Each structure stands twice: as C-alpha cells, then as structure tokens.
Image 1 (cartoon, rainbow, N blue to C red):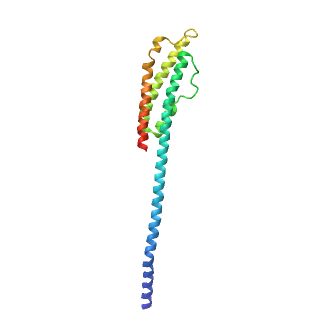
Image 2 (cartoon, one colour):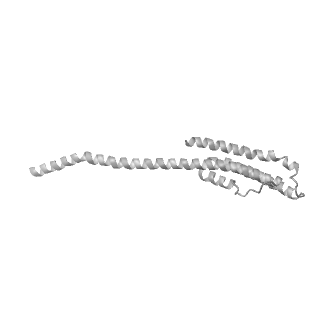
Image 3 (tube, rainbow, N blue to C red):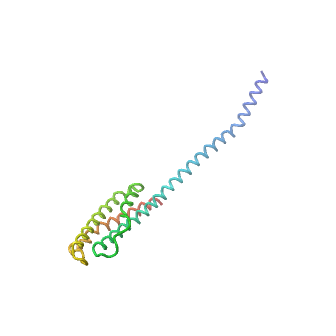
Length: 173
C-alpha cells in the first residue's frame, strides 16, 4: 500500500511538473490562433479599404469622363465637329461602382446621372433640330441659349460627387 501511495505521489508530482508546460503550450496555441485571426482580419480590412479607394478613384475618373463625353456629344450634334462619342456612356459604370462599393455616394451618383441624362436628351433634341435644317446649319440660337441652364446641374453634380468622394477617401486613411 505504501508503494502504491508512493507511486501515486510520484505520478501526481510528475503531472504537476508538466502542468506549466501544458499551460504554456495551450497559451501558445491560443495565442497563435488569435494572432492569425487578427492578422487575417486586419489584412481583409486593409484590402477592403484599398478596394474602396480604387473604386473612389474610378468614380472620380468616370465623373470627369461623363462630363467630357457630354461636351463631345454637344459639339458633335450642335456644330458637327469631331465625331459622336464612340466610347460607352460612362454613367453605367459609375452607377455600378456606387451601388456595389460606395453606397454613401449612390444618391449623388444618381443625381449626376439624372442631370446628365436630361442634358443628353436636350443635346439630341438640338441635333434633331439641326438635321432638319439645310446642311451646314447650326442648332437654332434659342436652343443654344439654354446650354448653360442645362449644363450647370451636371457640373454642380460632378463637383458635389468629387467633394463627397474626397471626404470618403480621407475617412479611409
């Protein structure tokens, strides 16, 4: 019995000696898992910020491209200079980016697209008027006089969008 008691005592002592090793191993495993999870989460957040930043840059580029596209359209339809814009209507991509990645810009993007669409329709109407006139004619003056009135909301929407995009970019820093 004494032998058995001594043996049990040795086993308990051995287990107690191993306890710091086991606890240290558990701490290392848990610490490694937490560090891995935190690192992965931080990396994903950084990737999302980078992706949003890239989408912001593209939205700004597209806003300016839409502006240029509209002016090119007007110049072609009103005066016959250059060619009709060959590239795709930039507003489509602008809306996709806002809806997918930058929902806080969606409302101003829709405002820009709505004003740009109104301007585009106005330009097409001017082009129709011009094509009904003898070759070499220009769009009637009374229609051209509304150019600033029709274009101003587009410029204002572009400026508001660029400002809001800048504010969003600063928040991402």
